[in-house]
Image (cartoon, rainbow, N blue to C red):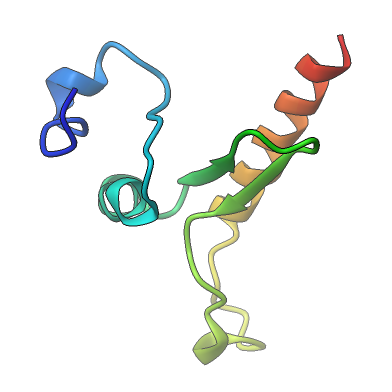
Length: 87
């Protein structure tokens, strides 16, 4: 799919992931669609690398109001990738 329609609901219905060549091409729509659970996966490395789709949130650090869902999703995805690689 072209980048301008890749994240349309009808296009997304047929796949579980999107391979994008540029950071902004992927993360802007992912954050818009599901900010609290989005996961960034970097491919082609000799190790598993995932990250939450949010920033550091330094403005709310230590206040007990940050949402850890994206971090937990990134950890879970890393675990699943590592398990498949270990087979």
